[in-house]
Picture 1 (spheres, rainbow, N blue to C red):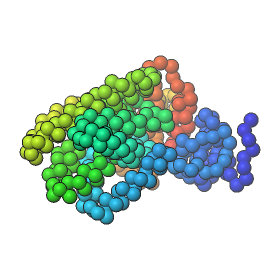
Picture 2 (picture 1 turned 180 degrees about the horizontal axis):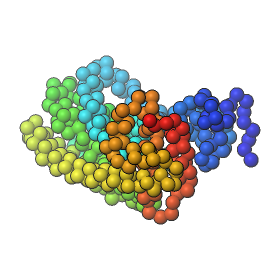
Picture 3 (picture 1 turned 90 degrees about the horizontal axis):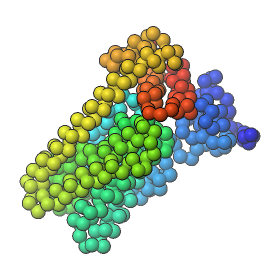
Picture 4 (picture 1 turned 120 degrees about the horizontal axis):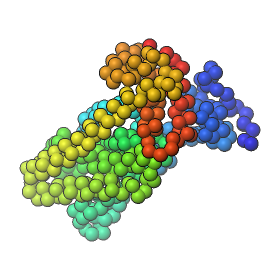
Length: 388
């Protein structure tokens, strides 16, 4: 039996007309109560309705704790080297659209993607900065820190950000692994560029460093961490434990990162021309290999989703109009584009729930009934408003 609900806590059903944020009976019956933020159900659950969750869905305690010192460092850099910080955001506008394109098959919640970005920007960056600095001082060599320490600690910390999304039950399959790996790595790359660009500005080398890191190789970190995301996503899709399944992907990520940093250290002794030549050779090879894998997996996920729409329609009562929209990819994109902005949220909600159900039914082993019930509730909630 749950404890009595404290006074001033709203308990009921948002679907019945309540829109205020508050604790309500969990519609999926996983826990007695789930937090409704006024627009959607969140991951905050509990045995009784207590106080409002202290951490929003786009954050977590590791992000908050590590975010404090990283914000201070970033603010100081913004005052001392404002151009370096401004240029650090350039990869966001290059890599970000690609991540959004990858995420169109099974759209992830915006709050979860923000959390992944922040994890890379503050948690992975702060821990890596401390460890790499310590190693460089201990060996009195920046090269040892760059080649021996950085690839290991940085990829491990980014991997923890991906695993955190599994813990939050947001990562459902291979494409999710790629997507969250990309956002974590992008957050890391942005803040790391703050530091690199600030140092380069002091040495009057900002233009060359900016060209190599932000223009020539903005996908470097996402390409490394993509292999970890692939390993985690495959483990989830096959209902296997994350450990030791993650090790092969993490090993490839570390090896690629180590080879990349090593080439830059070697190229640094050859001058800027040597750095650029090595960057082009190694980066293009890595980029092509990873792009081929990503495109193949995305096409496979897209084909599986559209082929399962009739099956999902029978199980979840989709209308003929909805089947027509979601069973043909171009029709779905064209329909979404034609909708007013206030209706796109419901459309995206239906699409996301259907896509996750398709991934769930595509997993090996017995159907996860708890997850199926949760996704069924999300689909019903999203379909509460007409799509067209």
